[in-house]
Length: 114
Length: 112
Image (cartoon, rainbow over all chains, first blue to last red; front, top):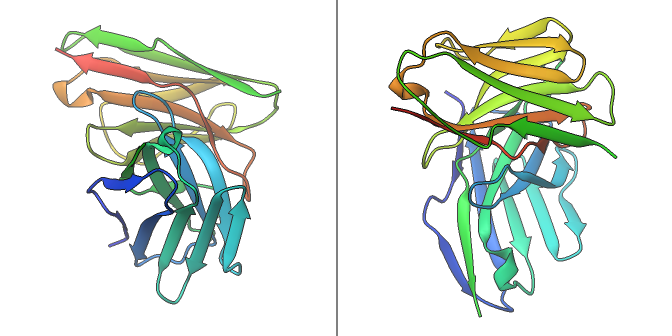
């Protein structure tokens, strides 16, 4: 069956370091992969989208990689700040249907300490 | 600019009571609309999606239904709530690929 795996354990890092979050998937051939940020009690906020033919995408301090051979995406936050503390969700869009339907991972909680 | 409104923010309902959650989108036409549910410690589960007025697709058989009476209005309903319906309900819209979703602020539903 299709599966999206994100580390369920919280990632604790120190301010200024680079945070790296992992998203692995199986039995899936996504045309797009997206990353979202979710704060407690709030709806997720879209951050970045990467296509299957793109290896890397950047936006300010954020970087996403997409390896369709490994079936993995890495999400990096450089020069992390306490304000980056949140849960980060990856989401896959199969692309093989006529309609966009995202399937979400369970998310990884990031804690950035001063 | 586009905005999405979802209400109420929190709701406590007894088992067996009806439910109606509403979501409206402003600043765009013919959006794709979605209802997701997020249970504690779990990922977002897609419940319903809609490509247009009156067009509803269900992803998971359950005690809920959805309707889209107007282009930018999406309603989630239940005739009789179950304890298992408790969760965080999120409405979202999108213009389609290759763009992301915009989520509402969510409704925390507790069935008691």
